[in-house]
Image (cartoon, rainbow, N blue to C red; front, top):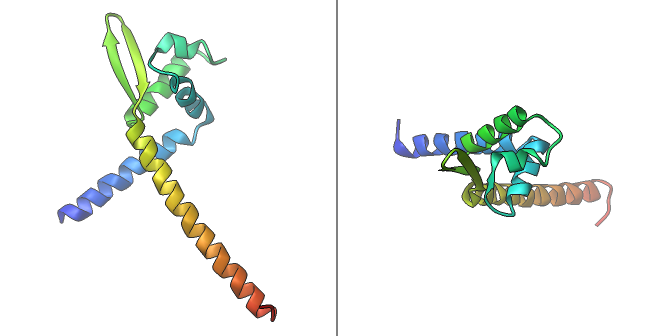
Length: 118
């Protein structure tokens, strides 16, 4: 398989993991909480009305998606946002938004013409 295709497939798989991770409102809130800086898992968990194991699962999904990094300090794990994948996702969403805006404008023009409006 050519390298360009492998790279495109890897990018698509990474994007799918990121968007799946971002689809969950709890995970988005975790990212919001971590926007203030690095935190221990227990400190993150205290901000949620769900169990610590549930928060841990969400942290794991965010880690797998590449949205978080973890630093071990003694017995503690400190989590921090990795901004690159979030910027990439935002860029892809902006591109989709621009595409939809263009398509909706074309549709509006078509509908106006079909009604005899100009």
